[in-house]
Image 1 (spheres, rainbow, N blue to C red):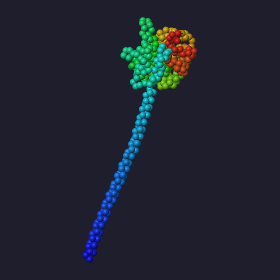
Image 2 (image 1 turned 90 degrees about the vertical axis):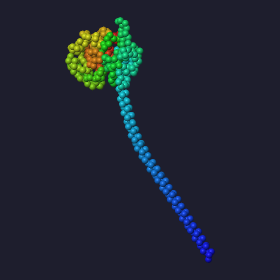
Image 3 (image 1 turned 135 degrees about the vertical axis):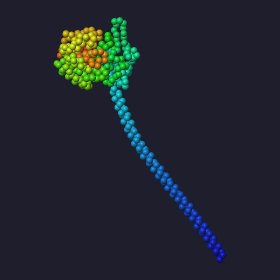
Length: 378
């Protein structure tokens, strides 16, 4: 009996020990499972959080790309604008002509792009080797061809320049260039500096840009030459001359003109206007290289001496100014008779290239004669 009780007691103790051991293991397992679950949830949260955090940069990147595109658009627009402005700047050009012997020998004839604030000197310096004197105001040599001042009675030769067909009244460093015009340097003999104050060889200048700015052009006719005046006006407008007015020719209309003037008519009619008659009488000083006589024309050389006589039908296209820098030069398109006048008008209107680079011109039987004459009366 005593042994039985002892057995029951030991069995109870073992049962209790196993019970507590089992409970302890379950608690440990639950704790481990809970920890693992918590860890898993935390990892999911971390993973989820990481993914969410990555979404924001994606949006930012997308936004950044859009901003980049916008910047690129603006940059492309700016570049395009700059390119367009660059093309415009490059289109600002001036024609430079360098010749000898009143345009007979062409040394340089080209259009060059202008830079801001350029002067006549700058344009010349861009294409030629030059030497100056008087502090740069006077050009004494272009590409090795130098001014020449001989002894007493010898010929003087020098560089003269014209802007749009007008002899300049300032040095090359003092004349600011404007786009679209023509600067013409010529090396020739001379007696007085401004003996040719206006020339015809820059046509359709000075009627487009003038000397220091454009002004309305007046075409003056004698009544019977109104048709020819209308043809000249049409040609000028075709060349881009903005304002051309036609008026009857008289002393008052000549006096009232504030821009370039073209007088059109037979010489017998033009000669009735006192100013033009006096200009013809002063042919040795007028710079036209032409003298109308009762028999026809006298063509002058560079010393203003009659070197050739033309009788019968002939026409002329000549220009004159009141001095250097004259902003209202006078052109005369005339003839010894109606046929001679028409020949001159036809050259100016239909074949103006024939007078390009000429100081003055006479027309005989369709031939354009370059003036002034030099050696061998040519």
